[in-house]
Length: 113
Length: 115
Image 1 (spheres, each protein chain N blue to C red):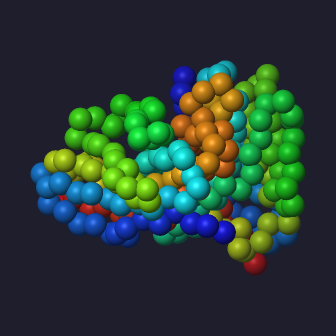
Image 2: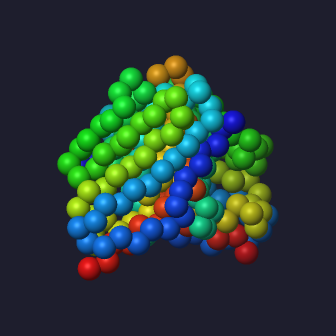
């Protein structure tokens, strides 16, 4: 089965630094998402992206966050100035149709020190 | 109103037994209810999903029961196996009326199936 690929699997950064989390969605998918999971807590929606623009974002997704699809294969999440509370597992997900099965990557564990 | 409440937080079942996980939602606009399975170090993977036009859906050993009037749905795992040991999340979204795949997740249930 095709997979969503995320890199790196672990990222450690200092508070205030910028980080970019990278994802390669499944090739024929058109809808892209970022979710996050703080350790021991539920998975939370961050943002959805379609046709090169944000479709919807949560209250977590403030001005420090941005997403981009710089080419035909990558989908990135940038956190401009990381905070301690940004420490979480970040999952990229994609699907070919908005109401269909969502495929998640294995995640990037972000640790902000 | 966006919450999905899930119980129990953890569950231990003997091999061959039935595992039952329950969820309740408040937002009546939700119309897509998936269950995700997550193994350590992996992302959630869709297990089974239901839409509110049916009260039950079965796929192999996994069954979703859905009670629209009570705003509750549950996952039943029949003949539970040690390989089913994982964290299970219920979720909900306004799949048919917009907002599809903006999933609201429950808090998760850690299932352990013992030999």
